[in-house]
Amino acid sequence: RTMKNGKQPEKGSSRILSLTVLFIALCGFSFYLGGMFCSERDKIEAKDVTSTSTKVVASPKEPTVSPLQIKSVSFPECGSELQDYTPCTDPKRWKRYGVHRLSFLERHCPPVHEKSECLIPPPDGYKPPIRWPKSRDQCWYKNVPYDWINKQKSNQHWLKKEGDKFHFPGGGTMFPRGVSHYVDQMQDLIPEMKDGTVRTAIDTGCGVASWGGDLLDRGILTISLAPRDNHEAQVQFALERGIPAILGIISTQRLPFPSNSFDMAHCSRCLIPWTEFGGIYLLEVHRIVRPGGFWVLSGPPVNYKRRWRGWNTTMEDQKSDYDKLQSLLTSMCFKKYAQKDDIAVWQKLSDKSCYDKIAKNMEAYPPKCDDSIEPDSAWYTPLRPCVLAPTLKVKKSGLGSIPKWPERLNVAPERISDVHGGSASGLKHDDGKWKNRVKHYKKVLPALGTDKIRNVLDMNTVYGGFAAALVQDPVWVMNVVSSYSANTLPVVFDRGLIGTYHDWCEAFSTYPRTYDLLHLDSLFTLESQRYGFDFSSLRFRFGMVLVSFLNWIQ
Image 1 (cartoon, rainbow, N blue to C red):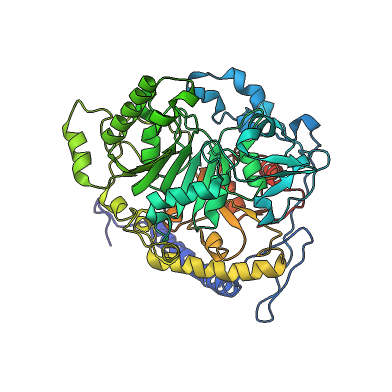
Image 2: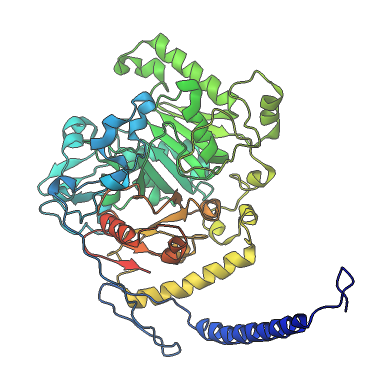
């Protein structure tokens, strides 16, 4: 053998070759031993799981699973003034931020030196929440001791205090005859709400979430959205009732959801100025509603000819607002679908010709987004003043193209191919894995699957398999996909489930004591790869969002 310069190799080369061969042999042997270990490990059908009692149940056919050993960490107790502390939407810090477009109500997390890492106490007289489904109609007054809505909206019957409870009669500003009658009217306008076509919805400015609560009986899963405030506690009431909800506002940043996710968006006099700022709030609705999906508006300026006197305005002003709204929606490829009395419905078009027309008109407003705009980027991402045209793959995920509920839960969505390594077989394998694990979880935690657990947070989901395995149980699951990991959240929504993006370096967008169970699959492993991640801080956030009786599964 000769080298590139024509010289014979030195004797040391053969020595290096021998060492290389030995190294490869040792590597091969280690891989063999590793394979034996992995084969044994794979025989265990469920992960190590512990509860507060560290009770472990082993199947006769499975190896015994030992309790997970976690080093205890102590936190001091907070003062009572922090009983409803929401770190990233803290009213005490609002004055630091601008009032333009109410941006102070968005997420603004405190710097490290301002964080209050202490155990948040419950209010005096706090009790475990009333169990589902009774909780939809009533909650303990001292769990959410806020009278503002009861006093200010008493004539609208949002809620009513009776003794030691709040009762929710199903009233609202735009549904004086009750929420069920209101939804019945809506279903007459949108038949797709009756047959499983419409499955996921978002309610912006949700009040006490009566609309989302009523839809649960109709097979529609709604995220109720409202900002943190000083007196109304809308999201807190919703979660106390066992209805899916999250803190948020359409202001300067995108909502933490992927594009083309919701089958329906709803605003019932939600006070969002839809026609201001060039219609940028409507553009965000356009982004998150899937092709063929619906936007429903009740309240000003709908039905202005009859209602304008009660709105402290003039008919001319309301007509102008309505015409401007209709013009903006048309320019964004929404078409008027139906209207009756106080309810108006628009449908997002999937027709390519509408979006092509925008692209060809250089003076069109809003313009078509260019290819550099990432449609699913939604964690601290500014709102974009442009229209996102649906791609061919997204059109195949449009309403009417995807299967109806519940069939869509078990069908691999088109968008799974956008995930690195994603496939229909991978989804099927993931579902099978979680069905087995949930069976094991229920042995460890018998309360799971009963009315003792209602609000569940899956803190590190992939395809929503854990939620899918619980779909027949009286629970709902908020699926969280990390803002810096593979973007699988579109798949979760396409299956008819709900979720949000989040970064666990920060507090979640909820109130204290709002979830009955936290589920962590490989979350510690995922977070350990990040430089400087504080695990004790993460455990603190666990305690903040859980109700007083602690349940968490890792």
